[in-house]
Image (tube, rainbow, N blue to C red; front, side, top):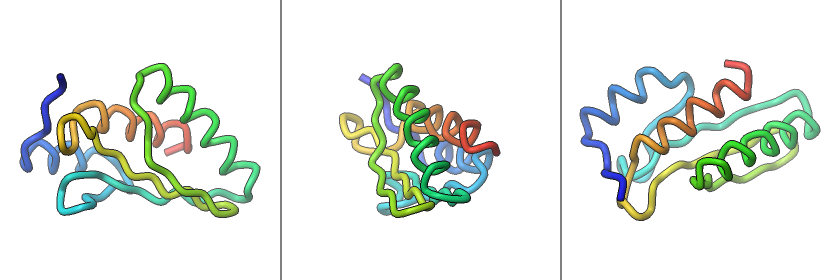
Amino acid sequence: MVEKLSAEARAAALATLSGWREARDGAAIARTFTFGDFNEAFGFMTRAALVAEKNDHHPEWFNVYRRVEVTLSTHEAGGVTERDIALAAAMNRLAGG
């Protein structure tokens, strides 16, 4: 089982993740990605889905046109873990920043 990050570790990790913020009173992290159009947004989601599946760690997300809202939390740990931080970093890379 993976362990939930402490508030200090979560804050330190978030400082390295451009665009991400705490959500759900620290039990999750979230970011909204905005792309040029629906095709770019859907392409991002497809690439991110492949990474998520490979790591058996799946995001909560919502897509409307060119916007993708992502929330990450490790439910079995009851909060944010290194798995969430790693997926957030991968999503940032996939989005180009």
